[in-house]
Length: 113
Image (cartoon, rainbow, N blue to C red; front, top):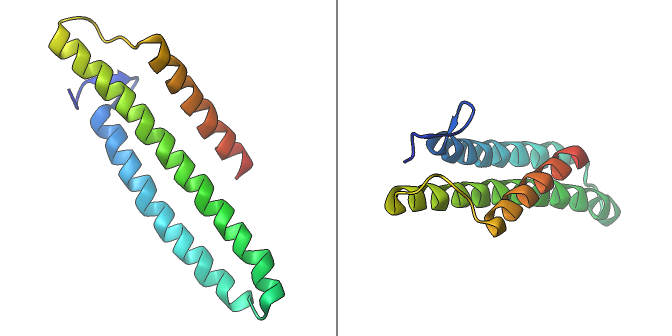
């Protein structure tokens, strides 16, 4: 199940690995960003400008990770349904809509970063 190709060149195992690696890299990036910006904060005015920028970056990162996790869950459910039901790998209409919405949201977040 985890090693079956879900789309060209990507398995469910690859997707889970990518989610983990993205999360780990984002943690490092956020810590580096905070480390670089910390010396720039000299007073409360500086903090009110810089802290919201950091928050927005963290929020965008969390949304992207959340959408990848949702995509993986949808694919995992469809794969499990195909294996246990003897049917083909298919998604319900609701799962298709959720998957498309997740992909659109990820793209929108990437463009705004």
